[in-house]
Amino acid sequence: MPILETHNFQRVDIVLGQSDWPVSGRELRLERRFEKLIDSITFNFQKYGAARVQVHCSRRAAEMPNAFVRSANLVARSDQYYHFWGKPWWLPSKFWSGNASRRTIDRIGGLLDQVLRFIETEERGANISRPTGASLDRRPNSGAG
Image (cartoon, rainbow, N blue to C red):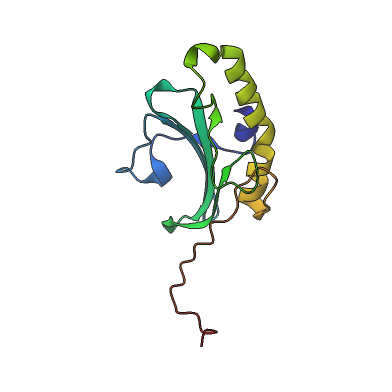
């Protein structure tokens, strides 16, 4: 997508520069590296050629690529964790047209500014998934008692 190229994202064949971690055949992955960070946007397509896709974005520290600085999905509503864009699962494929796919692509394209803003500033727009609440801090709650 041209908007991502203007922000220095490039399509990659291996994840985070790890030669033993190839990009799946069902996904399109774009990454950019600067300073000590790796930003990524991944389009995960559903199995069996279904016209559905999830969009994930993240920022990671280059020296610890398995650790997220921040991570989110592009969603239809901000109270969602993830969303499948495209043909509804219940709709027979014969009723899903090429024009419907183009409208979905245009809709996603119109929301990529929120993805870029989240990656760069951690601002959650209306179409950025809510935080999972997960924490790497496993210490017991010191306030319990």
